[in-house]
Image (tube, one colour):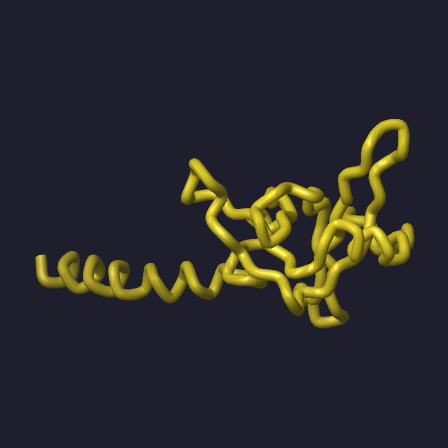
Length: 121
């Protein structure tokens, strides 16, 4: 009985640290990042995260984002560094997150297209 109690206490104490260890960037997991929309400071959606960019050690250093454009212009895939980005709860679903940028849609459109080698696999 004592063994079961000790195991339960260890599991409860370890759970928060395991959750933190699973966060990859901006306090979110890779899956949460790849499921996020990119929003401006007013919360307006300006794109969708299509993938992550990693360094040689596998750390996430940026996001590949498909910027929304009006038809008939095709959407544009750009690479955005993590600096200036933050995770914000998605309105209406606090378990989901958007990625908020300080840059405007016009500023992001000026970024060069992401190279084909940057595309998510």
